[in-house]
Image 1 (cartoon, rainbow, N blue to C red):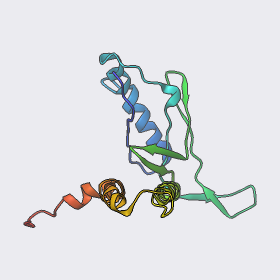
Image 2: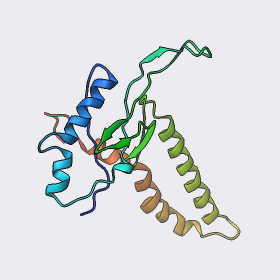
Image 3: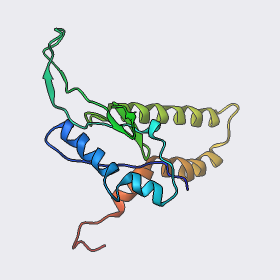
Length: 163
């Protein structure tokens, strides 16, 4: 069996409490590690990462600035260290530890710029494809590619609203 993405979410007052909850989700009876055994699947614990999602800050005792982001700590599962990470790509979305979305926006702009550059190269008046073929290409490829993330939210209607 192949599994790619997995998410365990724990809500707590402190990052230490949430780390403890995540660890308990994995090691408790019928938890993640028991599921791994029961389904004959192997978790690659070296690929795991733990991310504390908070914008809280603490005093910076080293001097440069007054505050710094709260320290994130790793957890240990089966004697392996699961490192605290600052960003992670989950189902195509880059999530950062403060939920600021800067990395994802930069990634999306870069991807869009590359796509537009390639499209412009295809549509060059002197050596490119004619407009007769570029318009259908744009409608069938570019528009769905740009609006794909919106389709699930656009197709959902509020309860009680008729089409």
